[in-house]
Amino acid sequence: MDIPTFPYAQMDYSLAPSTLYNVGGAAAVALIPRNIEEAHEAYDWMREQDAPKMILGGGSNVLIDDAGFPGIVFFTTGLQALKPLGDHRYYIGAGVDLDHFVQEILLPNNYDGVGGLTGIPGSVGGAIYMNAGTVNGSTCQLMESVHLLKPDGEVTLPMHPELYNYRGQCFCLPGDVILGGTFHCQVAEKDQTAIYNRYIQRRRETQPQGHCCGSVFKNPEGDHAGRLIEACGLKGTRHGGAHISSKHANFIMNDNQARFEDILYLIQLAKDTVRQEFGIELEEEVRIIRAPAG
Ligand SMILES: Cc1cc2nc3c(=O)[nH]c(=O)nc-3n(C[C@H](O)[C@H](O)[C@H](O)COP(=O)(O)OP(=O)(O)OC[C@H]3O[C@@H](n4cnc5c(N)ncnc54)[C@H](O)[C@@H]3O)c2cc1C
Image 1 (tube, rainbow, N blue to C red):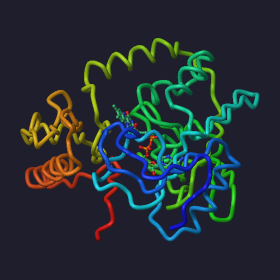
Image 2 (image 1 turned 60 degrees about the vertical axis):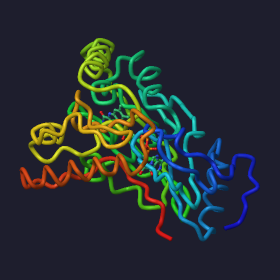
Image 3 (image 1 turned 120 degrees about the vertical axis):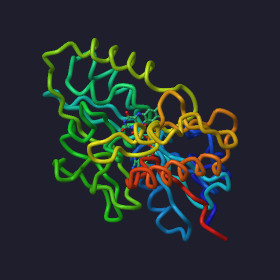
Image 4 (image 1 turned 90 degrees about the horizontal axis):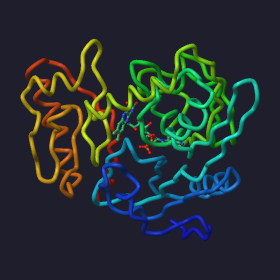
């Protein structure tokens, strides 16, 4: 791999502080472009390199190996555009905090969508990639189009319900970068600030605080991963510096300098036990980034 000379490139970049789990070794190279032009430059350089590649937003849904990432991590956090386009439409850069979008655009205008996005950490790009949301709605539902960087260049793709599903989508292929997206907002009838306050309060009551990735597993059809793990008696189970939360069994917390392997152990334990007890295969929502073997 070449040594990048861009002012927004850093070598041997510690990843743990860039994740909400606060776990993970260093990336050989971090590219943190500050605008679309730099994103193009970084992307083109990255594509030429014979090294593993990863895109990272706010790091709220990733668990990274303590051994680090022996390649290039492309951060989208510098893409901070936020442009009103008129007619309740807004272009939001991938690096904007989702909560900033909620607080600065949705709430002041009393736009719909607050119920689905309230209290979700991370970036708008990560929220688009994950189609983050709740039972009350998800990110892609609010979008008119998504702005991507692909090997052929920039693409603006009209959003369509067939392009996304529960915590996923099919428009961002491996190696593609979501640069941002256009949201077409609707003025709501109900008071969105009251909804925001209610859901923030509910999260405080039902979810633990601390280093974690939110829900570790997707909910299986018609059930809740947390209910299944709790029914297996696993709440509070500890391994090393990590434990399955006593407040919400789908949360695995790093409360004492957990290692990558501590959290992986508990993920596997929950999967194995739920499979044995209920015959249900839990699927991870968290993205696990293992250092390539050797
Ligand atoms: C306390 C807590 C509560 C949570 N509650 C919820 C919830 O209610 N609902 C929910 O859906 N999620 C929830 N999450 C999970 C997480 O916040 C969301 O998935 C979030 O949208 C991820 O955004 P991010 O920027 O942090 O993505 P990251 O963690 O940085 O990345 C997640 C994935 O997206 C990819 N990615 C990120 N940005 C881009 C980009 N610009 N282009 C291409 N790929 C990209 C990464 O490669 C990775 O595979 C919660 C997490 C925590 C810690």
